[in-house]
Length: 329
Image (cartoon, rainbow, N blue to C red; front, side, top):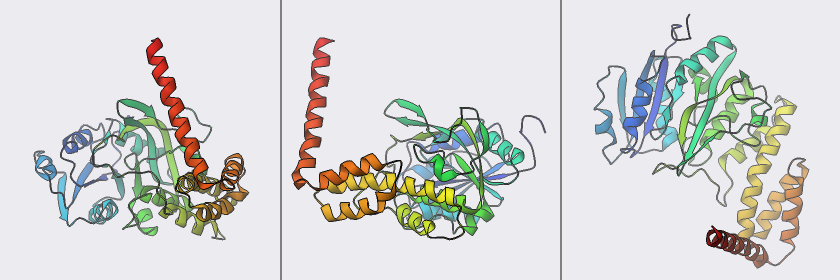
């Protein structure tokens, strides 16, 4: 094999589409321009009402299949693509993201060089309103590193090693964990990664070869709201499993605490003190976030409006600082 371009391994590229007419041609083109050309493309139309699919049909390539279904959400669309796949390795690409030309080549090399892996992923660029950043990862590794992520939960503590468009997984492994959780609109990606990480090895290349467009229209918001995220519920269940590695559990707990503290701040802003205290009770054993937990406990002892007022004062101070900086420029 030379440069990893041919190994006999074929990929099924799954692209879920819902009203992405502005981006779909860019996305498909990025696949067709791959240096590694052994793939099929499965476009799952999740009930689009715009011109997305007509634009997809403009590509004349026998490797492209378009499948239609009523709108059921991105997880159901991805799962449909997995079920329709003809090959053992599934690579996922959202219809508003794109790959750099060497993405599949690098994934193929990871699978060859780290034969125990059942998940393979790369770094990625995050694009948001003109700003471009490389994804952060918590493990002490340098850009260009490749190998096994032996504690995936630890790698998520201060960043995200994977995006929904920067990894590939073995079809059997996906089926073993039950595929994507359907009916979940937030944290479905994180939930899948955690389920895969329990019993499957993840090979990783810290080279950004995918582009995750945070600023694309119709992008599902990946933030938090006042309800408990699905990944939190899943994570709490995983913490109770007796056969899960303790080091993984410790890291997973700290990851969950980080997410829950963000939700606690939102609830505190809305004056829902009892819910905040319940979250802080869960977070009380944290070593990494102990200072943040202590600060929030203090805020719960003050009148409900105090936290809101402090945030508004901070915003006012920031705006004032920016105003005077512009005057001096």
